[in-house]
Structure formats: structure tokens, C-alpha cells
Amino acid sequence: MIALEHASKRYTKDANVVAALADVSLRIDRGEFLAVVGPSGSGKSTLLNMLGLLDRPDEGLFRFEDRDVSTLDSDELAQLRNRRIGFVFQAFHLLPRTPAVENVELPLIYSDRDDLSGLAHKALERVGLADRATHLPNELSGGQQQRVAIARALVNDPDLILADEPTGNLDSQSGLEVMGILQELNDQGKTIVLVTHDAELARVARRLIRIVDGRIIEDRQVVDRRDARTALSEAVHA
Image 1 (cartoon, one colour):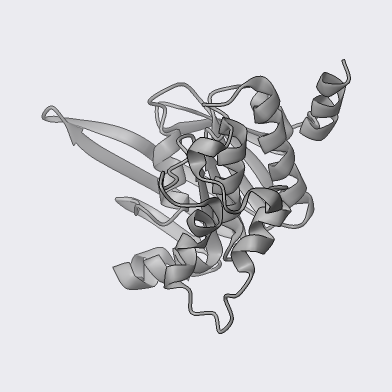
Image 2 (image 1 turned 90 degrees about the horizontal axis):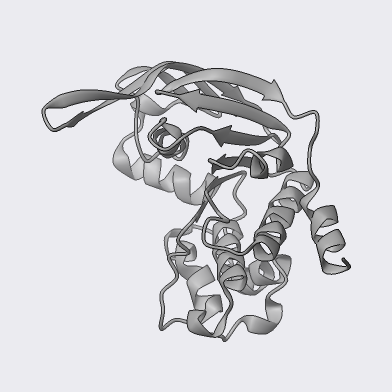
């Protein structure tokens, strides 16, 4: 699905050149659940932006579903993002005066589908919030707001979901609920890339890569995988 080959990205900060990514090669197959871990400033977010077609490498090759991203113009990249990629962020980025269902509908503005009716309600149903469709964000808990954000990421039925610290603003139980949803989506065939600094949270994934100073220093399968849904059930009944 995704292939990075010797990709590098540099930024200029205070007249100094910072290597955000340095000679990174990475392959992500369809249906994987990948966690990207590393300390602050290690290049995690830069990598996620590149995978989400928000940024391009200064050097190296990036292929998305066998298409060389460097050959696409801004409009083509935007269309590909809208159709194939869903984003979930630490900050929920919900419009405060807009009901949940209308927040979920926002990506559909740019959709070229023939029939958009009911898609937002179906997405809310997938995250267990069908009964909260008309609620404003301030009428929802933090965990519910993040689930609305996940529904928004799902509304165009993307193949790839990129989650950047999705539990960073949540309590532990709400965090487990969100991670359980991501695991369920992965079980249904969605490709998930999770960025986190939390090694324990990364155990919900099937594969882990570790980034330090813009370089991948570890890439392994998760042998002690944690099932967030089981952990949530145990916490609720404890």
C-alpha cells in the first residue's frame, strides 16, 4: 500500500537545517496496524504528514498504492487524501457550534460519490454514537468527541487511517474505548498507522517501529499485543 525508499525531509529553524527524517525506508502493507513510537521531536509527525500526503520528501521516493506521489499536483493529492485517507488527531478539531452528524459530514463536501445520504449517520453508528447525532461537541465527553472525530475519518470509507496521539486528551477508560475502535476497524480490514510516545499504548498494534532523530532504529512485530477491548472490559468489571 505504501512504500518509502530512502526518504529524507529537512526544515530550516533559526538558520539551522534540521533533519526531520533521514534516509527512511518503510513498507506498509494493506491491513496492517502499525504503531510509530519515539520521543518528542523524533520525526513521528513528519512521517505521518508524509504518509497522509500532506508533505513530500526532499529526497527519496514515496509510492502510495504504486503511484509516485511526486508526479501528483496539489489537487490530485487532495482528491487522493479525501478518498483514501482518514485522519484522527489528539485535538478533536470539531466545529463547536455544529452537531456531531454535521461535523462528520464535513469530508463529504469534497466527495464525488453519487449518493451521500445517510453516510454520516452510518459512520456515527460504527463508533457507537448513533444516539448522539444532534448533540453539540460541548454536550459530549472527551471520549465521545474523539469517537465523532473517528466517525468523520470513516465517512468516506478510507483504506488508511492515520491517528496522531488519539488518546492524548482522554482519561484511561476513554482511551481504551478509542483504541478498541481502532482495533475493530483493523480487524475489518482498515490499515491503521498510530503515532504515540506511549510504549504501552503501542502494544495495541500488530507492528511497531521506533524513530529517533529522524531515523528508524527498530521495526518489529508486536508479540505481546494488548487487546484494548479486553482491557476495557476488565477495567469496567473490576
